[in-house]
Length: 449
Image (cartoon, rainbow, N blue to C red):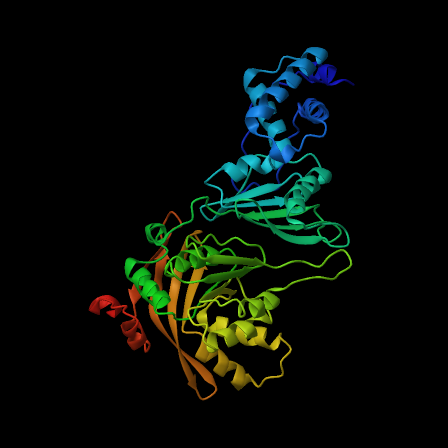
């Protein structure tokens, strides 16, 4: 049955797609009655462009071609799309050719922090820490896979049955993870962690309530005094954003080397060298891991080394770098508390394959790390620095920690918002002399409880 006859038979009233209610129990797929028509336009436009490199196309050039093709095909089929529907079809075809298909509008939406494609019919987004269904769908698994390949191919990455997982990034630095069948049973899964086109600064984090001005001044002094800092937190807590903000305190005249799996840090200094890992080729060879890049960075006369995240054996190389003159280094790690972060570091050092006694590992950690900045995502979706903790050293076989600042949660209000306040613990850090000798003079009352 032709599209025209099907539309007439079903008497489909073309309207704006309804928005899903928040937290819907299983989304009902919205079948687009114009899908065949849109597919035809897409095909005809690609034929018209022929061998043109679509990556070099601009929307100003492409839009007239799509509009002309749409009008021609509408005349052939005897269709008259409403003006709003015509605009939507033109935009969607344009997104397919020079954008990332159905999720392009979500990528352009500044209120969306994260996009989660759970197969072709279920797309979630995160806004202000809350998950909700997006009003977009894909045609089928092949459509999702096409968009994934469109993201990873320009980066020299691949995804197929032999390598069904990939980490990548978008041109704006947003972080991408994709996993496909047979590992993913729902169909191809795509997760995109978006980053602001204009990097957040410390004023923005203070404005969001992530920390206080006093805490920001303290971290600023620690960075400029070349203390080694690790930002700890759970998944989605905002570690990388905070790492980027903290990195902005590094003086302009220092040489900074960043090391990441997928380069996403947006540093504003001019003397920045960005290194990125490389996956294995189709033969399983040629992989360059973070650990390899950390070792190489030590030969590049770094004044600061910033590792996006330590996950395994590279922790040992990072600690050794911190202990051998490369002070002022920064990194992040997954952990729920500062104490958990130390335990994770121990485990990661053991993953390096070195048969070291636990006490020797703890001595390395305690002498390398000066400050742990703990970030958490709370129940209402807000993100806060819950601890700024000093690593004092060893006492027996235990690493001693003391909190300098903490967030005290007092409850949850009727709207579900977390209530609480930041406070100094009243303890002056032991490295205060190091801050003073580096010219970082803090107000007397900054540590008062």
